[in-house]
Length: 302
Image (cartoon, rainbow, N blue to C red; front, side, top):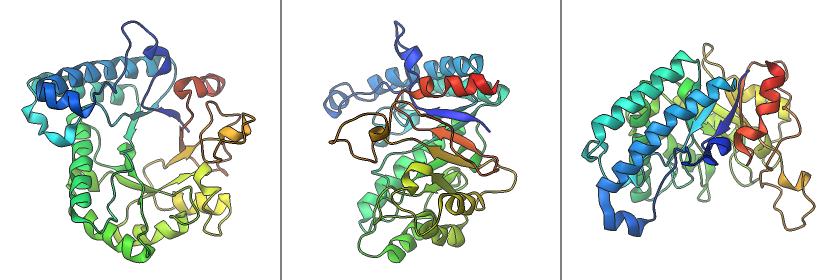
């Protein structure tokens, strides 16, 4: 079992100059400075990814979620149009080589605007572009085309009919490049009107992609399954030779006295590691304090 954190290293981010992989810019800046500036930010992000992987290794962390912001406004241009493309490619290949050398699992979680279930063609086309970019980044890093290096998304919409929506997901899945199809996973939601693990089995049975179980989300969308039942069902969808990924976080309301907090909001830290019911899984901890939230557990395990 590995514990991981998502996207930002708080410790390195406080250094001067800071080390981060999510330098970005607003749309106005992109329109003014264009691809050359996006390329400059991209090369800094790629360079710092190497440093984060080194830091993770030094601190016993073998699981990291890569930010989707490594290339700002990536949907607006082809990667090969970046002036620093070859240099960036070399840096990313080096980062991937280092991750494999240190046995670090790298995954990513594209944002909620990725909607394969959408009935609107332009939304689906934008989704395909964004997911394809994520797949290309992982290919540039030389990462495996398997769910070990997963690209994880939600369905992100019901549109009045879950079955029809999931049918669109499966149909649009066929339009994705192999670099995405072979890595794609789907995750359960945190609203009762959305998708439980039981719902997502429909997609798994149609196209075979694994389900990522989120403990916190399950509390709000159970599908009439217990936590143990939902976890075991999700884990059963993974290839036998790949350790499944689960997501864990705790409600901020459990840690703070504030009536205005939504129960779905994530806490800064976690009070314990979740019960895995004897299963071997890698746990992505989605706490706001990032690596700081898991260090004591990683060190205790060591």
